[in-house]
Length: 451
Ligand code: GLU
Image 1 (cartoon, rainbow, N blue to C red):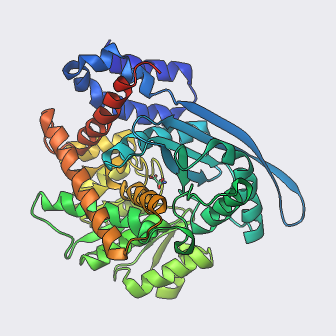
Image 2: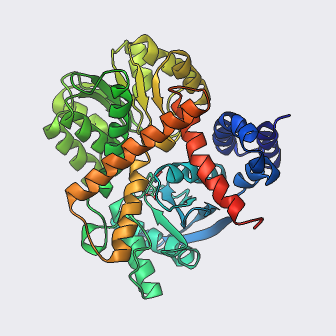
């Protein structure tokens, strides 16, 4: 059995219940097989087996009191996966689905994603099964403080630098960073995604969505296309989706969908900038449902369905898909639905939104398919830029940060294509992203010896 296959077997055997983690490992290891032949030193140093084992896994109790003084307890996680090329770096997710498998899959992906950015960042991820939905501001604050009351001892600006993810945005980062600052008595910018007044970077809120669209534009360019006049489906309605829509609008495309956990809306007229402002106010300030958008703008609303179900069932024609919601949101049947309805380009704004069956459909149908670890790396890349600004006590202008983000996304796109070509897999962004991200980390791990 090849070394990469035996690693997949071992991971499944050791933690049989960690399905999402298996999926992420399998997707990466399958494409890394040829690196073992070309780099016997990776095999000799057992890098494949070492890289799937986190450096450290921290699990902790997070007790908190609600507004009526009822006491609750949630579970907190921080998986410090790999710090070969820089401090552990990756977001924190608050969502009821969070468990060790999900945090390990996200942390594992983050190793390769962060490596692709070319910045000095290792991979990590954290979170809790806490459900922010319906909680008051005061409850969110108390939860964040309790979470940080334990996390603070494990992180630091040169050790581990968390940020946001699903359920963790500017408000939560503010509460967590404020608490860290209070108990550590230092202002070292240990979290990224901070508010602009206290060490955040311009363009960080926009960066994941903008970056995914920049990446998609690069992919489209390889076939002589751009966003002008393209019909684009976006899923999700949070931070990534919102700024992906903004950038598609700037580039002349038309976004016809968004969704949340309750419904999908299809707006044939396109979500223009005015409607986008409304959506931002609805989701970020009022924390309402997309069905309100449908009521306000008299658009179609499909309760209990995601964007990909609706495209397949209603036969909605689109050119480009930007899944910006969550893992495994596109199954095989819905991927086929995209192919049948004219879609030929997918850039993943979320982490692992396409199931393995969906990825097989995209590849068999000759899609331009940008996997999350490449296409959504703009967020963490701009976190890296925030870290640089914090350590130099400077803040860069919007144009400077946006320019760097664009260059980083172009660079990631080129690295993917170059690595794919070097391994005889022209145009295969999945193989290219995995190999380009992996080789750098593997070489660093070898340099350190067996530690
Ligand atoms: N959660 C984001 C991601 O999946 C951002 C992480 C960060 O900025 O550290 O990459």
